Amino acid sequence: MALVFLIIFRIYLNWYAKYFIKINQGIDDIGREDAGEVSLPPELSATEKKINTIKHTLEKQKLDMKLAEQQKNDMVMYLAHDLKTPLASVIGYLNLLRDEGQISEELRQKYLSVSLDKAERLEELINEFFEIAKFNLSNITLRYSRISLMRMFEMLLYEFQPMFHEKNLNCSLMISEDIMIRCDADKIQRVFDNILKNAVIYSFEGTDIEIAVVGKEENVEITFTNCGDTIPEEKLERIFEQFYRLDVSRGTSGGGAGLGLAIAKQIVTLHNGSITARSENETVTFKVILPVS
Image (cartoon, rainbow, N blue to C red):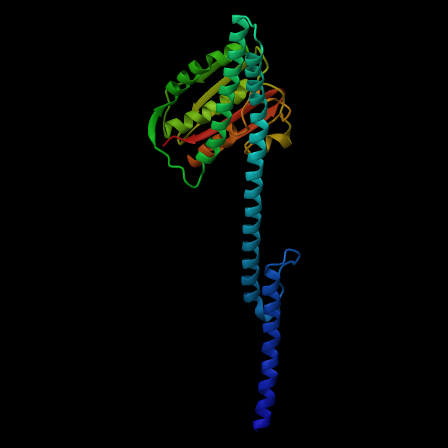
């Protein structure tokens, strides 16, 4: 009897040992990048599911870490690229001022003016890079208040007059009534500022920019339309990515570091709204939808 019991016990022990070996092999596969999903006998389907869940979680964490590292490297690369041109101009004109012994006052003022413009451009670019860290979805706090959209846009258009004049642009505001919304006024103004600045940069000279505000029961739709080169679909899908530029060959004098629209999207998302872009027939339209309250 004891011998029979021992034989049965050894059979069960070998049976369980086989499963433990399979589970250990599955656990070993968790950390292997070249291994697919863990597969265990049908009797261990619950354990298989848990192991694969852990495996997928670890893979996602590893991918997120690689993405974060890539974004950090991209930021350094873009910072170095964007700062290089204005910095070279500042150094070049200051060297001219130092080395040219006989220089007219008019030329001196011109060199100083260019150096100051480029130095201010450097400051603007550096501030933009700090902005992307500031507008982080995980730690930003909104300060809500009720604002008048009509008043906000009237102030915005007044501030943009010099930029409109430089490219001979006409900007019209279409709003049927004074719509009030509850939002973080400073941050929403930043959204409109970034979109309008983008429209100015990419508009054809001597064309129109139209801003239309339509109030609905639960939300408000704001559209910005300008005349410019049609944006290909593959570029339109990436337009709200950090550091993305429509024209990578364009110098830094005409635009920012590619953060404006990324910041705009983050702010709108925080307000439980949406922002989209479409382009066809040399017309570009951005639409922002925000809840009224």
